Image (cartoon, rainbow, N blue to C red):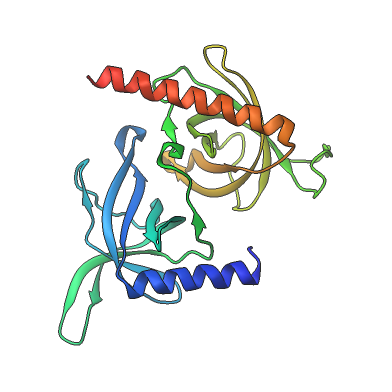
Length: 252
């Protein structure tokens, strides 16, 4: 959980965004594991929900599903801000004033709103690449140099990647339950001699798939030892740039 000052700041940001009916971009996972974007606007808010206008998506119709994970992106006072949420109501009526109600949907109200990195930091799917195995080792102590014998471990496969974090699929036989804010060291090898990556991460969101037979977990990179993390993030950025170029060439 964030500090009281940060939570208060996030609440003020959301109040300002709601008062201005700010446009919002929602990034969500569609069929084929592609990241899609829907555009909407904030209409209203209560203690638990943000009520949004009917979404518009250039990649095909977006039909919200309750529990669906989304990443929201908005601009306020020259800053690009974002947060993680999930759909709480797939369809609802939102009152604009005493005379007007419109059809919309709602997402969970986050406790933390953060400044978002540049657009190239959005995660790229690696579904077209041979499976990239990921090892996870839970960190339960403030001292990250400790390797506790009873720490939870699991193996999974990389779903997508950016220089800000990764999404990993973990089969139920490896581990069924995850919780947000858990920390893990992850270890994987990028293809094409891009090198081994070892990063400290925090679990930000999760989604059960395949009727509970697997879980997708979103992991955000955390600062660790600068002499290790900085060159690794640079390798990830180069890998992502190369992957974007290959995808662009195939799309021509």
